[in-house]
Every structure is written in structure tokens, then in C-alpha cells.
Image (cartoon, rainbow, N blue to C red):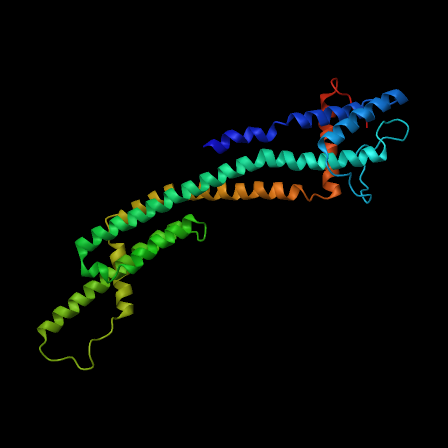
Length: 295
């Protein structure tokens, strides 16, 4: 899907970030420096600052050390340090939004499309089986179709992540189906016995014997009543539905996570921004011979 093709964009910095990194390396690359060099470095920085910033610098309560170099050995003064922090915060929020929001939108679209496909498939299967069973079993199916519809409702709940244990869900469905068959057999046997006995039954029809029905249902299950259809269907469900559910829900969860990252980036505290700024400096230091920053 197209969302996976966008993931490499997360790791491709924009040209504005490259320019910011180069300017930072220029500032910190001069350990002892002359006044003329510092003047040029500050002028270049101010040019970039006013090009990318609309509002002023961060509040005076900011206390983190973005460029902790002893006084006299750096072109980075306190005001420049605060401006670097403010620009970095703005650039981080904009970059995260431009990289992550398109990926999140594509993941959300794919998740909705797949979820609709699986739900539509379940609905179509339920309707086709309902129509077929109604024609084959007639009244006996219609008076017992509620648990059949509930089975498909439970499957939809499983796909949506609202319930688990798919294997037990299938097992319970066939157990209830066996019990319904036993109840129908008991009713048929009772009707036949009543027809042979001409004497009216006192007190009306006797209620079904629940213990007897459950015992017969368990015995019927041990006799392979469904000719292993229940076993094979359970195996197929366990092969198909868990990966499908994982794909749909993981796409939706990842899209939500990416949006949360973008939203939280605009309210990062000073410690978090300082760690990110230091990590950028560490990445620059690993380049070594190209930038050679000093801090």
C-alpha cells in the first residue's frame, strides 16, 4: 500500500533543516574566534532567524543550555542560544507535520478501506447463509436463527478489537448449534409420543429437561456430529481473521500515534527540546572531518 512508500520520508531532512544544521556547525566550529568571525556568524544566523521566525524568541524563563561553551570561546551568546531553541522548536513541529501527517492520513485511509472490505464480506456471507438455511430448513431454522446472527455480530466485534478468543467463539457457536438440534429432536420425539397417547396431558406441555438436553448435546459432540466441519472451519478462521484484524487495527493505531506525536511536538518542554538539540549536535560530531563542531 502507498503508506509504506512514504515511510522513508520520515528520515529525509528538509533543506531548511540542512541549512539550520550548517549554521549551527558554523557557530560552534570556531573555538578561538576573532570578533570579525563572530560578527559574520551572528549576521548569518540573524538572517536565517528572521527568515524563518515570525514571533520573538522564547520566554526569559528558558534555562537550558543549547550551546554550553565557556564564555569567550564561542560566537553563541545567551540571546542567540534562546533564538536557536525557538527556531529549532518551530522547525521540529513543521517538519514532523510535513513528514508524518501524510503518512498518518494514508494509514487511516487504508485502515478504513480494509475494515469496510472485511465487514462487507462478513455481511454478505451472513445474508447468503441465512437465505440458504431458510430455504433448506424452513421453520426450524427461523425459530433458531438468533444465535446464528449473534455469531456474525461476535465476528464483527472480534475484527473491531472489542473481543478476543476467536477459537472459543467458533467452538461455542457449534456447541449451541448442537444443542439447538437436540432441542428440535426432543420436541419431535415428544410430539410423536403425544400423538400416540390419546389421553390429554394434565397441566399442559412439559418443559424441556435442560440437564438431559445438555447431556445429549455433549454426547452428540463426541460422535463427530458435524463430520469435522467445525474443526476445519475453526482452523480456517484462526488462519485468516487474526492477521486481518492485526493489519486493520495496527494501521489505525499507528496513524493515531503519528498524529499524537505531531500534536505533542508543539508543546514540548525545555528538557525535551534540549535533548533533541544535543542529539543533533552529536550527529554532527559523528561526521567528524566535515563539520568538526566543538562543544
